[in-house]
Length: 456
Length: 167
Image 1 (cartoon, rainbow over the protein chains, first blue to last red):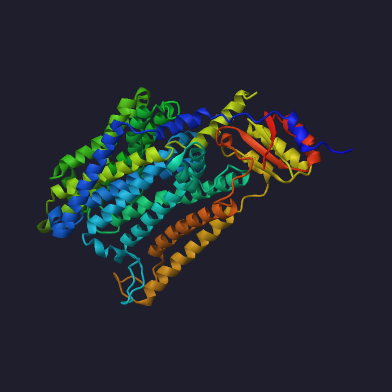
Image 2 (image 1 turned 30 degrees about the horizontal axis):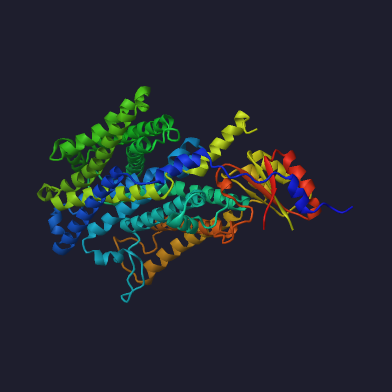
């Protein structure tokens, strides 16, 4: 018997119908389509702040750090405050992507992409401040262990060196994490775009076709990266906290600093994700994907971390009192009732008191309330670092070397510019890359469809 | 050799079809999926992914590099800092830890590229934009006389469409 030729069988087979696109793809890729006047206005504002800060920074390089309000005994000012602030913001992304991934918290899928992107942008913003702070930017490579004619090596016992390694590792691993997660979504965008976008996504998607070999390696890579990033995210702000805790400055020299800073970092990171994603969800109509349930879960995280941070504030005072060390006690008294009392009470109210309102279930799904609260938390967390750094340095052991620091206009513009720097990255990301992890949302939808018994 | 493409809507159907095909001795098969589904990936190939080896190698290289770098540099040009030993393991552990993560992460990315064969410069003949929407595909390369059997087999496993792929 001769087998039937393939062509004759093909005649029996229905012709392949035109490919249909899925609703998830359409809804989530639509965010990247077109730019409105409002978008340009916000982008222009962000770029305006960024360039203004750039101009001031060039002026500062020319004139020296003296114009930045640095004066004895305070040589860590707003730049270091803002550095710590942005490193803290960077913690939500990896926490959501890595730790919640390992805990199989499925609700992370709607927000992980935007949070990961914010992580990268926040680390980039933070890194700027190390360069700005050292003043002589052309010597900043001294921090790296590179072979040189003097055969000198860096001091690995210094927490500043640990910080260099921690921040570099964090930026690199977060970028890898973001990219590995993006590959399938870039393929989705590639298949549905034309012109320069198609060229861009074709290159970045690396020829992804969703074969089992590709998915298996990608899922494994995400799992391993999560395993690596989980201790990393907890270590980075611990190392930043040791920049302070390794010294003997009163209010800094405390073993509580690492968990205290990590909780604060996660707290501020979640607040920033809420601050950015509430308007994005509203403007691009993503309510179906980023639901109130997601916001409520993030609100719960805010409540938990706010409580930890509030506990740390109390523990600091308790330890100062219980230790009977006069310098500690004076410094903490000055923190609450001295020249920086406003900053201290802003920090306590915004970080430890207001978020406690989230115990009320209705407020956890009240989006305008969450927006206002998360903005206040961002303000409060900046002031927390201000209080710790400036408050500590201005009231060290000997009253003869006490001093007062006032931020100068140069610093304020550069700090404002850092928000522009961060926002312009995020705005461009919105238009260039899928802001919600499409493939991961689909994974949940296809599972849900199977459980409903649909599809036939 | 002709290639048959079956289109499916559910990952478990593709997985079952893939298992059946492999049991019947058809090994030249490829699947397309819009999202990661472990049951499908395992049905295509039970072996654990080789990415793990890359991560482990990277992590080990990182921890060794971290300690070696710090210990060697501190002893290469000795400068006493704070009266502490030149070979201070506690602070160097921070560096070793960070490099473990850094090298582990970089090697995991390399593992993805090597094991997942990325970048892939050739698009599969059967690949279609619908597989980055929400359809699943299973392509079988077979002899002409097996086409009818595979067509039936794919349809038995709830393939919504079966077609011959134009090479």
